[in-house]
Length: 245
Image 1 (tube, rainbow, N blue to C red):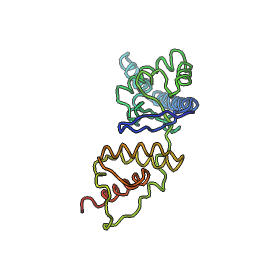
Image 2 (image 1 turned 90 degrees about the vertical axis):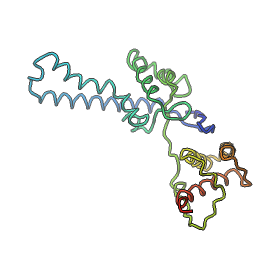
Image 3 (image 1 turned 60 degrees about the vertical axis):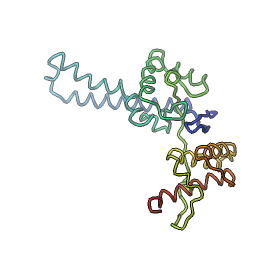
Image 4 (image 1 turned 90 degrees about the horizontal axis):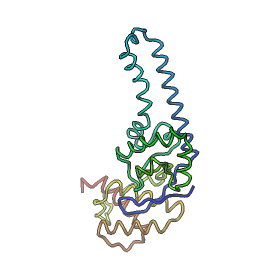
């Protein structure tokens, strides 16, 4: 499946792979297994209880509500609690994000959940399958309304990239303005470097370097890739020794 390009809050384009229809169907089936497991567990609990709990209508309604309500709100609660993933999505390594690359708001999750009635229930799953296949951004109707999509989670950084160089106190920071960058900015730089190592995406490296120079208001004689690596080294040093220097 072709990638979708998302412009982040830092005004950098990052490409994501939309979750395939197959992944989403399998995730849905896994969630159905969770549903049936809960129904079986609830039935066993109900059969083991004394019939006196069902002696009046209010007690019966209340008891069965405990079994039904969790199923009704399963997708909504899971996606809010697990940052865009149900148990099925987590098993398939896919998640919900906003089209700008950020985490969905609670209102976006609620819209996705409300439209599941149309997407998955009233007309079966075919409405979702057609919408996802036709749209090109992996969006069912609920995603279109909420401004979200479902993407495949890819390893953000390699182990080699996470293994930062060991820096001692004699290290000289070349770009002290890295202190202006957030953890999210540093994570994007890591992803960009990883992408460059994988597919030699020089355009993304140049775009990222230029944007960072604008944010920090600095100039550098380093080439774009070396500039990004220098930022990571300086950031590592400042995180380790910044308070002592």
